Length: 315
Length: 307
Image (cartoon, rainbow over all chains, first blue to last red):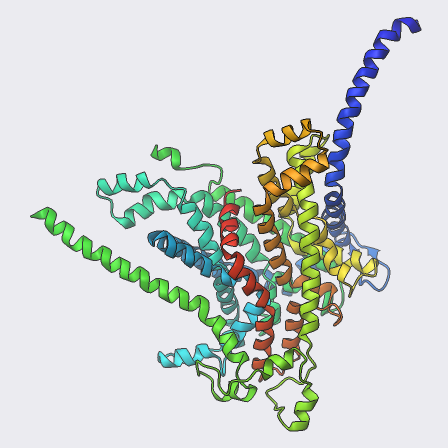
């Protein structure tokens, strides 16, 4: 019997040798990804799961945690400040994104009209605000928009416009913060859009011009539809970022005046540090934010038909 | 006749459009650069003059005293003795040298660790065959979608359990070994490399580590430098995470220091001259990187739109 198995055994050991070679390769593969795998497991995967778990706890970090099920979510949904913070965040996104995107498209189209050298130098300069820390940008505009001695009010005075309170008033604070972040991001966004413009075949414009289409019509019928893939990317990423605004608020208004700039992340931050420490509520709110972001992204992808390209229609 | 009439106004319209474009360009340049001049202008103005000369476009009574003050070169106590300190000046002791050093330690460590370890992983995902490779890479990618705040709170709890609050390693740890973006970014470039060179080197008896270190990595030097720049700027500018774990003065980074400086300065009449001097100090590395690598950053952004 054992003799019968001999050939099988030897072929087995051959494949085992091959296996060992493959395994050596695989082992090296795992060694290469090991540091990143440790980093990912400890600081991405584990905390993501733990966040959900913590959201079921009553826990102030100092005493023992108590499992309370969905109570944090119930408290959260009954908290007016939470709903207010969602409303403020949405208001911020609505002031931030449309204006920023339209401006960026306008700037990109303009850059595209200049000579290569000029547009390249301009893109270099336009990226500068995006390279600066949020904190510095926030401080700088807090100073320029100071209600009493800020430069902006001096400028408005010269134009014959009355003094504005900007971040000093609940009716202008969130708009001011949206404006500040438009200043920081619009150059970055316009560079993305500019890259998208470069992918549109010039021949389409030439053909349209021969057919007598004016520039505005060309923009509407060629540029905008063919820019859609890039615009999807720009909108999806900038909306996700916009929902998570924190730095600018923390440095300028601290959520005030009268809670008019208490965005969702600032609300969460206050749950951890400023009010009674409540880790459960804070993580529950962050989980809700995650759910909102996923929903908003899916809706955007659907509305913008992200999977399709219009270029085929033109060929 | 009719065609000439049609061409005439159109040409002037285009020229008008060009003038408008150049005008818009100038306005854009002004809006982008003037606020930065305003930082410097304010930082070079004496604290009293900031309040008395509100709209002067040049520094009033130019002085480097604000810079010396935030860098801890002059003691505010001496200024009090000389009667120079006014209500316009923060009396907090500031030592931006320390914060500058902390920012450098934190950002350089993160940049070194993250680019090295993420490149190693990216190379393996692109070139080495091992079980579950694509599944693991896909799971990494899902990490891109999780909002920072979801991870920050459990990570804060974890770092606290380790006793790392108020330490460099606490600030550095979460981004030291990888970020999903870094792995994804580098993998794209390793995938684009020609396999022939590596195969030739294999025949010459090079090991996997040799292939990675001596052949593949030098070939992606450009993207590697870009990633390093983006990582450095990103961690230099980071605020929320170091604010959570690194408020202590010994490890406080510049962004957190500026935030705390702002909290401590009087509400009604903030120490604008000092704050702007601090802001100017914190963007020196940004400006240096901008001058030398601005082009590279722009290129990498244009690349990121097509991933």
